[in-house]
Length: 318
Ligand SMILES: NC(=O)c1ccc[n+]([C@@H]2O[C@H](COP(=O)([O-])OP(=O)(O)OC[C@H]3O[C@@H](n4cnc5c(N)ncnc54)[C@H](O)[C@@H]3O)[C@@H](O)[C@H]2O)c1
Image (cartoon, rainbow, N blue to C red; front, side, top):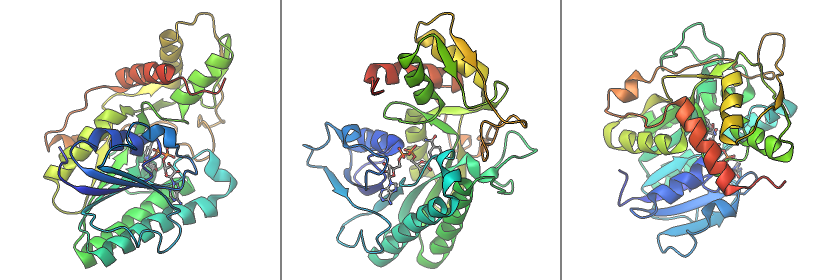
């Protein structure tokens, strides 16, 4: 468990960040910095009255935007443009912004002599690999500028670690599911089926198989790494099973109690959902398992739980 820390959490109003804030607030002091480009203050409701919590609306693209923040001893860098589908419209902008955010965060750490970091990376760094499950030492050949931006950010973290004694836990997440999410298959399919329970058009091919993890398991992995990984290192964070898009859709339909839904699958000629989409993957998680971490929910259980959470939250604007 992470406790007694003064944490800067970038992107903390977003999906994963806000779940971290809620999970860690009772044992730590947390300052969230977010420009709300995709985050939402609603995700942090219930925290604003807490003396251990501070929210600062700031754009991390500003070189000195973090200057006034003092007393931090752990930085969790979760701010980024996190989608792949949108990135095709302006690959350079998203790449530059993602890498600039992390560069500015690292400069803040250097100037304030902060040594502990947790970084949100992604399975997208690998691209389409022959090897499955993919181990951490497999070459990174990303097929989207999102994946490229995370490879570049990881590289910068390694060099700052070497020069300035930073200990970074770089977490390459599979697809993360849970409440407060506002994009991705689980959220978008549930939203679309709430709107029209008779039909669903997917943006992926039915045969794609991907690995999913519940956000609560990402947080337990983070706590494990904080305690057990004492030098900068990279870890895959996922589950050991996959869901085909077809089974994912069936799970959502079942959890929503629907019947006779007409489903149309998409996907390009190569079976990808869209350009830049890694059509099928599973991560080799033996490295973090060797540190004693176990996930609680496999991909199917994580999907079922997330659908129930999203339905209960009911933030679909329909
Ligand atoms: N959700 C997933 O399945 C997944 C998988 C792998 C990795 N990740 C990584 O985890 C992190 C969090 O992802 P998420 O799904 O919670 O996304 P999200 O979009 O919900 O959260 C990202 C947050 O960063 C903020 N942000 C973006 N640019 C900013 C800027 N210039 N200044 C300040 N704040 C800024 C956004 O407003 C948002 O609140 C990201 O780095 C993402 O790449 C996510």
